[in-house]
Image (tube, rainbow, N blue to C red; front, side, top):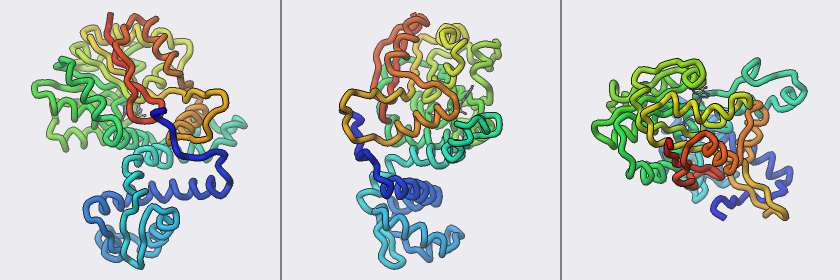
Length: 339
Ligand SMILES: C[S@@+](CC[C@H](N)C(=O)[O-])C[C@H]1O[C@@H](n2cnc3c(N)ncnc32)[C@H](O)[C@@H]1O
């Protein structure tokens, strides 16, 4: 099986507790640039790394020591090197940014949420910028080559990305296609601020336009985004379930997408689905699925199976050209034509 993971269940309490601490340590080291440094330099000297990055040496030493005990770093005094695991984790960093950086408050408040004492979006938030950053990291490490292959055969001049996060993906695709332009739409202000930085970094200011807007307003309240009516390809990644969250409007989302982007011939819609459970299930779990499913339950956002998505597209009048496994566990890219 393509997404067979390596986490042996049942997770005994020792593994579970250490996994929790380890995930926080990995996220901290990633934020501090340790993995990037080791990829470039092979070795890290603790005092000089702390001096260069203005870090508290005692705290940094404790983080490095913890990472050493989890097998993520090879630590000899002040000299730190990568291990085989640190190379594996570099590919999976997006999941840590997403889970620890983006959803720590949601997971930590599971009991108050279960009691009804706290509610997502009322007095409980995720860190939207971290969620968007984690998705961008996962894209770079696991998904971009699959999308590149798919989009190579598609003609476009105006590309729209819905729930675009930091607009990394749309910037890259537009840069690779001279003469094209892009619009990256996201509801989050912090993500849109980061998106402007992404666009400037790629030298695409004026060619890719980050827009802070609610896609539901575009679909259901006729909110217009400049240039949106010219889109010939519409994409959305890891965002479709947000659009489908309200069961009362769910069936309308696909027809409204077609109506709001009347020139679009191709829709590239990717999302993570519910991990199928089978009888006599294998006792190993992959990264991400358990967190994705629990986080959305705590936020009250329904998620869907692959088959549910495929039926929804068909009922909404789109033709499914193909369903492509998309890097992260139980995540698919649906290649659709407006029929
Ligand atoms: C999981 S992130 C995915 C980001 C990006 N598509 C990627 O794959 O890297 C989902 C994004 O959807 C955005 N979002 C959620 N609800 C939205 C809405 N109603 N309208 C626009 N964006 C929304 C969030 O702010 C977040 O950036």
